[in-house]
Length: 465
Image (tube, rainbow, N blue to C red; front, side, top):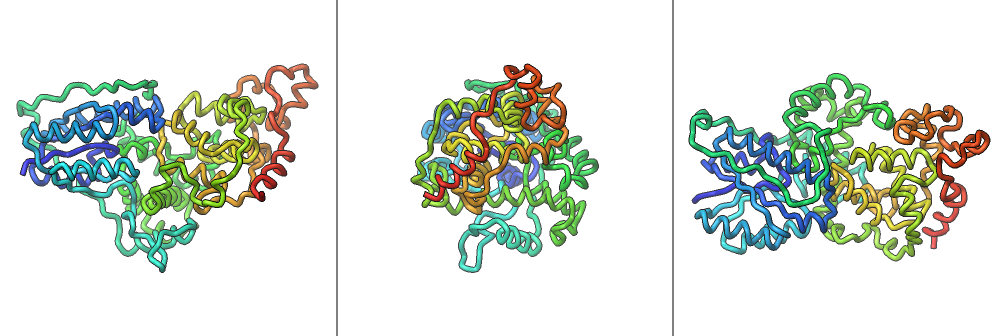
């Protein structure tokens, strides 16, 4: 039976099980179908759209060297995407579609619909390290707390290892064949230049080795300080499937086999972040209604958020009067990325200080992040808002000033993204309003939109009700 490989959020040749199986069975056709209308509904950022487009074209080049022709089509939404792939496969005499699963509800319904149109779909999992449904508590259910999930995850991986699909070997005749490369894929969607983020081949050849060699040993101590480039920077590639989480963990275990057994090792802190990523993916698998904007903890569904539009606008623009919050939002707006520690700080500020619905922040992040990923973004926002699985208690409210003093002690990150505060001494940089007034600089930076002690007391009362 003639087959085709359907690429979605798995834009890679390394550890791509659908590609591996299809290629081993002689399949040399592939397809990618862009869905601009659906992307708009899902708040896909222009930066990530450009990033995906670049990697689709990079994948096209890789597939060409393997003798695989990639057809790039465009649909409006998932219903049209279903019609398009069915029409294409009918016209080409294709009966089998190889694909890697996507978790979200609409995506699952789309794949089911394709199968119901008479095609055989052979699906694989490749976006988590531990297979979905493999890490369960003693009652056979999904964990509701991260730490026991992590322990069970480690037990599973220790017992089963990491299953990485072999990469297809280059077709020796491909260079001399008459195979024509597909046309350049160009999305009809608003895009922003993503070239500050290199393509995946550079990441594999340079970024990952350098991270392992130069940063991993200090990751535990450096990862919370936004002025230090101490993180891996791999989240955008994981989000679009250009990089495999299983392959990354496989590399780490090859380098440090003890990392699975010693959670005090510095490099375990990085592995722990990948386990958190798995945790949110598994959570979505077991609780698909999260995609509908519901809180994991239903008792908080009736929270009467203040949702002051002016406060929300100030947060979006980075004009709250709290330097670390504003610098973080400036980083997001200017680069399309935000340091993980700062994501927690600004999310806590929006939901606890301003009492704005976490869904507003969740959507804003997706509209701007190059590494926007539903499960991680939703999990992080519900964690901050105390509505989610293993969320921080509602009475734990980050103080943006002490967070600034602890994680940006000299104000280096603040000064980088808030130029008007560059001349403020370290002693005042974390809350500079008195200094600015005493030096006739009061108009150079906005006043705080809410007082911390008042906001904290108000938030606790709000949640207690």
